[in-house]
Image 1 (cartoon, rainbow, N blue to C red):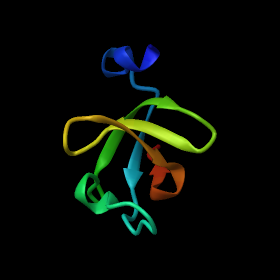
Image 2 (image 1 turned 30 degrees about the vertical axis):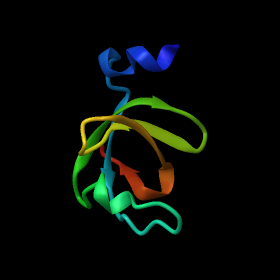
Image 3 (image 1 turned 90 degrees about the vertical axis):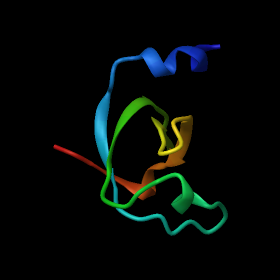
Image 4 (image 1 turned 60 degrees about the vertical axis):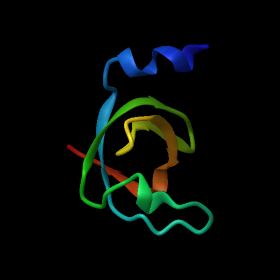
Length: 68
């Protein structure tokens, strides 16, 4: 049930959305190109962020680049 506390977790890093060209899902409805998001959790394939709808969601890493 760790996913219930992700909103309160510290930000791991920040990432910038570089594209919303998804093959399967409507990513452009919940992500904005050029916007910087706070990463709350991370796996090998996904970043978990609070998207534009205000919900915690996991997105493939290829939509983003790390902000330094």
